[in-house]
Length: 377
Image 1 (spheres, rainbow, N blue to C red):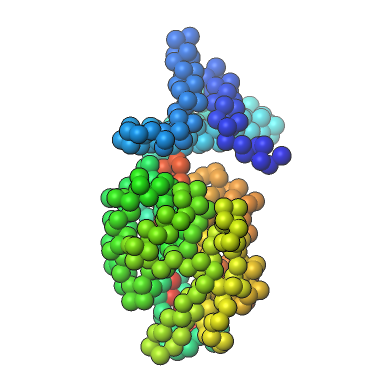
Image 2: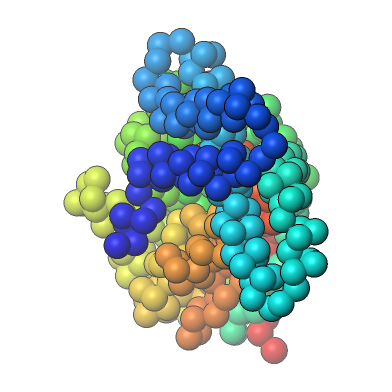
C-alpha cells in the first residue's frame, strides 16, 4: 500500500487533478483563466516525466534546461498539494469549532494564500538549496586516545552532481571544505546522478579536496544507478580513497584511528559480490583502536553497532529535503538527521550537501559538517 501511495507515476497525474479540482474552481479566474490554469497543470504532467527522460538526450544543454524546469515543477506541485490539503482540512475544522465569522473571513482568501505561500516556499527553498550551512558537532568516543582529542572530519554527502548541480556548485563546496583544514574528509555517497562521460567535467574540482589524512568515499545507491564501477575508477583518479567493506588505519600523532567504509546497503542488488558488510570492513583492524565507519544509509547502524564501531557517519535521507516531506522521512529510515545513539554507537546523519530532484531545501537546510572526536566523559 505504501509503495502504491508513493508511486511517482501515479502521483504525477493524481496530484494535479486534485489541485485543479480543489483550487481552480474556487479561484475568481473566469472561464478563460480557469482553462489557462488547467493547461498549466497539464503542462506539469508533461514536464516532470520529461525531465527524467531528458537524460537520454544527446543535446545536454537542452536536457539540463528541461531537467531544471521539471524538477522546479515538481517542487511547486509538491508544496501546492500539501498546502491545498491543509486548506481542505482547516476549513471544516474552523466550521467544527463554531467560528462562522472566521470561516467567512478566511475562505474567500484561502486559495490566494495557498498560491502565495507556494511561491514563497519554492523561492526560499531554492535559495537555501544553493547555500549549504556549516554544522559543527562534537562526538564523544569512549576510551579515545588523548592524541585523537579534537580530530576533525569534514563530511559532505548527497551532493547529487547532475542535471541541475554543476561544476560551479562543486567548486564552492571544495573551497569551503578546504577552508575547514580538517584532518580527514568523508564523502558518504550519492555524489553523482549521471555517467562519468556526462559528468566528469563537473566533478573534476573534487580533485582539489585537501585534508591531512586524505579524502575517503563510500558508495551510495545513486552511484549504482549511475555506473558504480566507472565512478569508483574516476573518483580514485581524483584522489579519493574508495572504501568497499574495508578499512584503513590512520596514524595521527602516534595514535591509531580505524577508518572503515561499507558499500551501500542496496549494493548487492547490482553486484552480489559487493553486499554491505560492516564486519568484513573491520577484519584485521587493531583491537582497542577507535573505530569510525562511513556508511551511506543510516540503516547500516544496527550491523555497525554489532560489529563494534564507535561512530558511524551517514547521509541518504536529506532530512526529508523540504517541507512537508521532512515530516514523513522518519517512516523510512531509523535516523533522519543529526546525532543519534544506538547502543554504544554514535550515528551522525548529514542532511545532504546538495539536493535530489526539486531544487528546494525549505525547512531542511543542506549542510557541510565539521565533526570533532572528543573523549567521552
